[in-house]
Length: 143
Image (cartoon, rainbow, N blue to C red; front, side, top):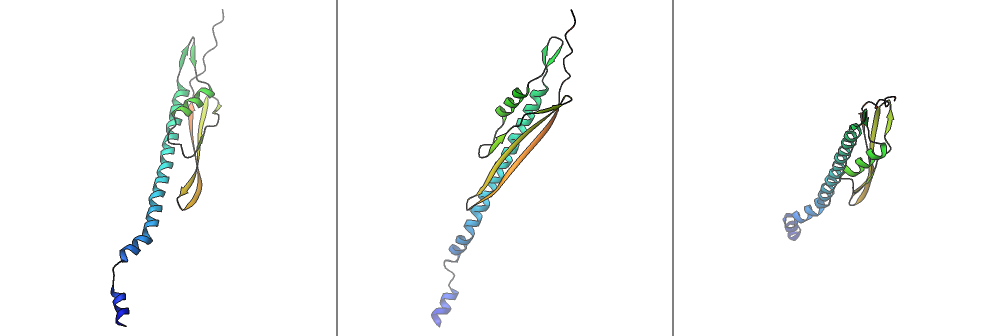
């Protein structure tokens, strides 16, 4: 009976058991924070690509009698070249849509989440920006 009382009162090794229980949960939380950080970085890269695409779409390249605006393919290429932070997932840019000199730019990003011990949901981000295009160049003067 005395030995049982001694074992119950002995607290050596308790910290090791507590660490063994808490450490996997702590590692999971820290890794989850990094995964969320990757999503925030991808979001910033998407916003940057949208801003650069919108700026490029509104540039007026002077030609005789007006402006020459960029084509949809040029705008998409500019957005693809300026995006950052989208390596673990997939990044896509649908073709811009233009209605009455108003262009809508869209970017999409999809990333499956990974939380070390189990797979998480697939997160999809989509951002849009509306761009007002410069006026169309006037027709050339009649000769």
